Length: 276
Ligand SMILES: NC(=O)c1ccc[n+]([C@@H]2O[C@H](COP(=O)([O-])OP(=O)(O)OC[C@H]3O[C@@H](n4cnc5c(N)ncnc54)[C@H](OP(=O)(O)O)[C@@H]3O)[C@@H](O)[C@H]2O)c1
Image (cartoon, rainbow, N blue to C red):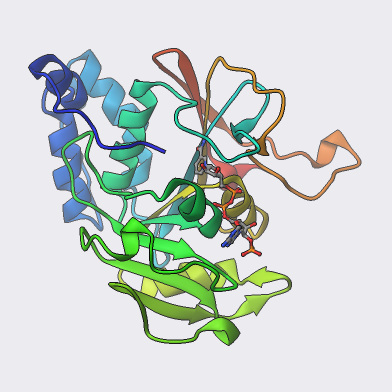
């Protein structure tokens, strides 16, 4: 997970902003529900056009329910962290900038309790210009305590979602606690999306870890999934996606996918709603 960004140089700022394209996308994100037309593509230079290609789908109006998208940064062998939970950094600086852009476009950024426990993340937008999203932690069994930064730093609104039967109060530190119905062994992910819609979220960014992203995907609650692959081999560690075993390859998801180069990494942007 990213840590505090160094003060960017003028050159970094220009790259990050794509000649003003990023600032304009942010304004459109704030003006949704219908950010259309974004701006005249013919006026955009190459860098700005690339930014529009990458981020345009995340500004689409998803209709009555939020657009839900996720990102995982993994090694060539599909790991997002070592067994001990270390994940800083698997992907390169360009991908970390991208991660912060995805946060800035989102109304809410969601992580699992395992990520909070290992990384103590802030989940704010620091590497690029943009607004901090609301932070949402899924802690089904209500095992986290209030020592973690996002429950105490007051940087932006924070919500902890747990199983209804585990809700033991209204607050943890500065954060609100909300109960969500269970579904089987875990929380009902469709209900999580409904709760976030009820809080006014139109775009929900699930930032990890692998268990949480896998559950959103398995429950049919993801619209888009981004996987950034870094040229690194861990050989062991925490898996990116873990879904129910398949017998036949014909059962595999084969989503329409766009591919972007990010420094040394390759980003696969998958339209999982259209996986067939
Ligand atoms: N490379 C990346 O893109 C990326 C992104 C985010 C995180 N990470 C790394 O991924 C790892 C975390 O991901 P993950 O897939 O293991 O989990 P996760 O999706 O962050 O969180 C869900 C898992 O954590 C468990 N959990 C909940 N509370 C816990 C507690 N107090 N102690 C221990 N486990 C708890 C949950 O169990 P229950 O369901 O029983 O509650 C569930 O298995 C960290 O090492 C983090 O650094 C990498």
